[in-house]
Amino acid sequence: MIEKNNIVKNKKLNRLTWFGVGGTSKIYFQPETEEDLISFLKKNKSNLNIYPLGAGSNIVIRDKGYNGIIIHFNKLNKISIDNKGTITSYCGAMDAEVARFARNNARSGLEFLIGIPGTIGGGIRMNSGAYGSEIKNFLINVIAVNKKGILKTFTVEELGLNYRSNSLSQEWMFLKANFRSNKGSINRIQDKMKEIIKSRKDSQPTGLKTGGSTFMNGKDFKAWELIDNAGCRGLKVGGAVISEKHCNFIINENYASATDIENLGELVRDKVFKKTGRKLNWEIKIIGEK
Ligand SMILES: Cc1cc2nc3c(=O)[nH]c(=O)nc-3n(C[C@H](O)[C@H](O)[C@H](O)COP(=O)(O)OP(=O)(O)OC[C@H]3O[C@@H](n4cnc5c(N)ncnc54)[C@H](O)[C@@H]3O)c2cc1C
View (cartoon, rainbow, N blue to C red):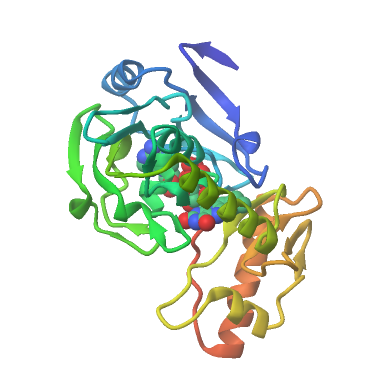
């Protein structure tokens, strides 16, 4: 049901996530501009929790939905560059767009973003990375906004970014980020991006309903190896299956529900624990009512 100004009540969320599952959110808001967002937050007097959503590539929203406000950042996506080579991106911009923007401006360093199917905001929350680089290596600072519409700038050090994690309170939503970049050659940047795309196609399932890596690697182990050793490759619950190609990926193969995906993940954790004594931690975020 559409209310006004991109505010929707009881919005179905399944199409907003890569897994294609999930119930509704009490309120859904898709700001078109920074001013829209701030004004919405300042006027909002409800006590509902607020949750920022990017491209939905690392999230499972439960079948019973989210009893709060989902703010979808995807339209806040402008990217610009200054004369020192600092790239400024609104946090709803897709990582790949930022990679292409950097290439078009002959700036190197951000090529790794070409293969990550998320937004800059999701990337900062998760400290996303690939091929030896991660967000933390290039992020200078980010302007964030809280539930009350108050803006604050955090330096990369203040965010406490570590492997697929960020220690800043969930209260802060990322709005606009500054990245450093290096002078580069467009052809060389393009070649590197092509290599990354090819290598991903060879090693990961593509074009499927998935959330990418399900569990985090540890300091001394790869999650996929533990999953494989515990005999979980190809394991199924309902319509959800552990990928045969990359067994740290769960695929929604056959009309899986969010419950199928969560239960499959928990079954894998259980089997891995019984076999190896190690507890896998979810990398994928799971939100919503149980
Ligand atoms: C096929 C596939 C391949 C992948 N490969 C990689 C990879 O190589 N490396 C890697 O690191 N990840 C990978 N991922 C996971 C995922 O793409 C990244 O974690 C990505 O950065 C998530 O961004 P998103 O916009 O989709 O976030 P979402 O899934 O929408 O949200 C994830 C988290 O980020 C938070 N978030 C989103 N936007 C904001 C914002 N503006 N402010 C504050 N918090 C926000 C959400 O609240 C949530 O907690 C892959 C996923 C898929 C499906």
